[in-house]
Image 1 (spheres, helix red, strand yellow):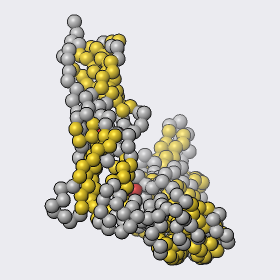
Image 2: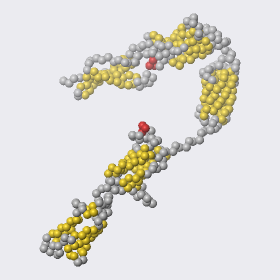
Image 3: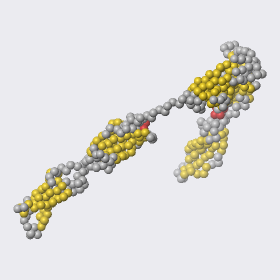
Image 4: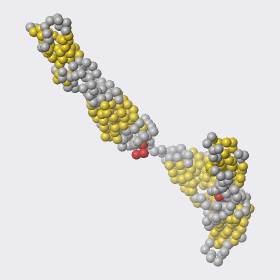
Length: 460
């Protein structure tokens, strides 16, 4: 019987903000296993598969188990505090991230106190878990308060936020009428397609301002509008505009009674910068040629514009064009070309004992460099690929025992002919009048000799 092992598989959310899951497994020979390192208050699916040397068996029934909750591990998020009157401050927040809640949020705790007053221990209030806003009332006029918050669940309170400060108004603001016109509005070009706007609030501070409405348009205001709810915000950037165009900008404050009067400003956006001239590609440098055989060479070079991380395998969109010919100085050299993705290439099918000219350029997208400096090199010699040509045998007048042999060098010499030697031996044969064979050989003739004489012939 083969030993059995068990595969314990778990499935759980991969991101607690999304409905996706991750599957993990552990292998154990035991019949029990403790899973550790799990998230708080998270639902897990668990199943088991037995396997041995013959493979895996049938999976068990899938079980769903939720881990226990714990105190929140994160404070409330996106906290803002702002005065809402002479004796009140409004606090807004969002709950901790889902991963940091560690359970169901049952409430929030707020603590507030006067700033820089050591004897003030402050006050603490709590709210329901579904609240996102709380108005602290009964405060002193023109006084700065500090506020911080905690999130709570059945296990207790999580970590607190930092202290946030806000100063109450000197008197309650009226909201019986719309706000006054903003005190100032300035605009300056940010770029060819943007404008930066800055402003100051209405001079009459006795009327409540809930926010601002920013409008703009090409030649006319309010073609587009944007509400700014942060009453402390004093600038904004308008984007997506057309270059070199006139725009009219408007700004007005609003409250529960509606929008106040508008303040206007006009401005022309900047021209688009002229297109930059394309960068010139620098020709490769340090071109080298290495003779590998009578029929091949390796060409290599340096590309000074190629980043180091692409030196070994090349860069996508960049290649090299190698040009070569053996017809040096010809009016029509009939070049051949080879592409390469890296800074070297092997060129084959060359002619033995032949001088070649090489040059290379870099090509990237639709741009090309100039040709590099030229390098020359000659392939190795090879054995002659054909026999000597035009062999003639001429008898010498007056001497029947002597003949002259004449020939031309091979058409495909594949190098400098240095000698004619065995096994490339010249044989002269014939039949004597007595019926016997005659053979004469010339061994190791100097390569530039195109004639030989045999004076050892028997007369017929």
